[in-house]
Length: 379
Image (cartoon, rainbow, N blue to C red; front, top):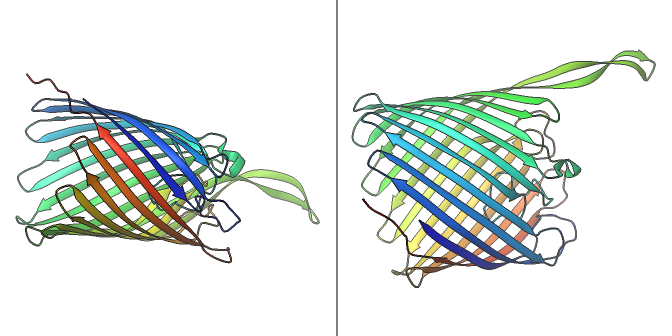
C-alpha cells in the first residue's frame, strides 16, 4: 500500500485551442491517490483510487472534480497467463495535460464517465511460439453532452496475436482484430476488421524496435428517414431506411528505442482508428519523438515532440480534418525519496479545416508530489 498526493499550478493562454477571442487561465490542482497490491508467486492483484480537483481563474466553467478507480488481476501457470483489468472514471474533455489524437477537436468543457473491462489470455504454445487473445469493452457517457454535440458511445474490441521467435533478437507476429463502435442516440454502428503483420528486432543491447503494417476494413450503418412520396418540392411520406458505407485503409505502427549512457531516445509512428464523442471515429497519423536525459542522480530532463494528422474514419463525422503538433520540454527533480517535482512547458498548434487561421496555446505546469513510504506485509 502506498498513498501519495500531487499538487500544482498551471497557466494556459488558450486552453480551448480556439481562434475566437479568449482569456488565459490559471489553475490550481490537488490529487490524492492510493495504490494497493497483493501478490504471490503465481497471482497478482493491484488497484488504485485517485481523485483530481482543479480550480481555474480567468474563465468560467472549467473547474473539474474527477476520479479514477482501476483494478488489475493476473494468474499464471506453467504455460498460460490470465489477466483481467478494469476501471471506472469521471474525467473532463478539457484541461488535460496529455496530448491525444482528439485534442482540439472538442472545445467545450464537459464531464464524462467511462466504464471499461478487459480480460486477456496468453498461452505459451512452445519455447518459440506464443498466442494472445484480448477482449475489451468501453462505455463513455457525457454529462449534458448533447447540448454541445457530444454523444455517448460504446466500443467492443476482440483481438488475437500469434508471435514466433526466430532467434534471440528477432520475432515475427501476425494479428487480427474486430471492433464494434455504437452510438445509441443515433443508431450509428461501425464495424471494423483489421489484419496486421510485423516484426520485432533487437539490434544490440541498447537498441530495439518494432514495425507492423496491415489493412483495416470498415463498414458503418445508420437508420435515417428518407422521403418516399413527393409533391413537387414537398415531402408527403417518409420511411425509415438503413444507410451504409464501406471504407478500407492501411494501418501501421512502429517504434524504435535507443539507450545511450545517460540519454534515452524513443521514436514512434502510427496510423490508428480512435473513437470520439462526435458521433463516429477518426483516423490519425501520428509521429512522436521523446528524449530523456539523466543530468544527475536527482535531476532529469525530457523533450517531446508530437505530430497528428486527423481525418474522418466514418462518413457521419464532419469538420474534424486537422493538423496538430506539440512541443513539450520538461524537468523532473527528486530532492528526497518521498518528494519530487515536475516543471513542464507545452506548446500546441492546430490547424482545422474550414478555419481561416490556426490556433495555438502556451501552457506551463508545475507539479509537486509527495509519496509516503510503501507499507507491506510479507509472509
